[in-house]
Length: 622
Image (cartoon, rainbow, N blue to C red; front, side, top):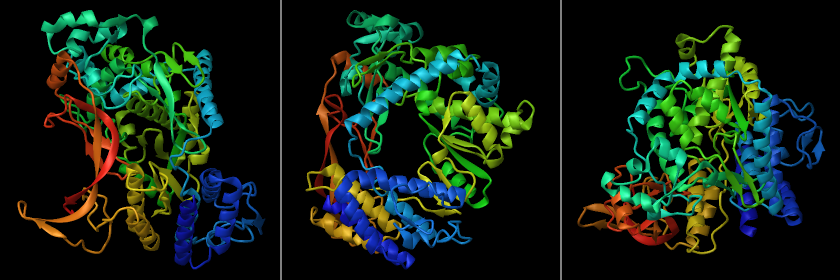
């Protein structure tokens, strides 16, 4: 834990140098409270200070109820006072006309440094989060029972936005022109890797829309495979398994692991759905796709760019939703897809309707949420539902039914990426009202539209300046066998360097070199664990065969499980054109490509890596 405090001290000293102040007393306070309160001070208390600070930027003044647990003098906290005096007036607490942006970044960096470190929550916090999942389901039932859902308006507006995309998807599903796909992740029936190609269960609901022989067998000659598959009636379907994964020390993230067969067919719908939504023109249409430019699924930069613009001009707001995925009701999706029967049948058939929560010993039946995180269709469906809700609010403000011309006029003013929403400031009230009437909760503590601070998709901006903190994600590695922690530490070090925090990056270099013998300078695209630097890289040798420079560095090497399928399962995999090649994301921002058909071991080694080792290699420095 000493390294944790040392890193905070190094950052504080360097940022104090930026802002011509001192953090000696601040570090004494951090050290004292850390010794008394433990890691929760760094991961819960300090982030709460940082969140209050954001709200003060939003309000353009320090609220007297902010910064609970920290002593004040003349209205401002004593903690980090050297920075705060350069942001707020010491006597009135009002935001200065020209606040120091470096000081704003410093406060956010020092308070949010450990806000998302991947450390397990306490059992009580985990249990409370699972109970929140159950309570959310009850909230959806209560909303449904109030019978206030204007499904006709929702259907009309969503059709205006997505009719061209939905019509094409409807054709693809009706004609059976979609290709299923297995992912590398966990499943509720605990199949992994190549085992997933030997499916043992297939729900009757799936069979009615996507026959097993057509989508899970190589061809019709193998229909005798039905003898080995149990067709499950609705009451016997495998429930999703609700688990938690680390998010913050305050609360974990809840995800629902889908059964293999459901995930398999969800992926079949997902691929063309995303491709069509992100296409400027749907194949066969002469007019542009109206939804193009409003939704994102693979690139967060448009949201960040709009957030930066909103922080300068003040015309765009950033909104955040609480429990966003779990509050998308099945009635929202049904109304959206009602005019497209084949698409609705396909989406409905691939949706799990039961959930099991092992931690609570609870089973939920006839789920009213469309899907939780874990379903392949959760992300695109929630984005379309939220965009529809936004334009219902805009329609209310305009006072007449939306036209295509009206919608087009909001390009560059409205954007949705998951639960990160961008809307015009003059529409905030009606959009929040629309979202609330549809059963969603706007997180006002993470929504901004009054001051010059905006936050969207991991990008934080004040008056156009990027003030996004660099978060420390994993504990310090103890030795070279802690491969994941080493990758995370190297990525963190490089982000600090690129942000200009060179002194702290240099301090980390010594720590890393104490574990890794080789840590060369290289370009960000280099394959190994290398240092980002504005100094040129130096070749250590030349590869005679390739006539290319090389440096010696450690490289992340995944070790895949030995998992084989049957002969029929292997044949199915080889004949599925979209199978056999996927990417595993690594904490350092790079990725590892999994076993593919060019890998002779792809039929015997598959799934997510058991571990990721680091091995010394000669690599290209670019």
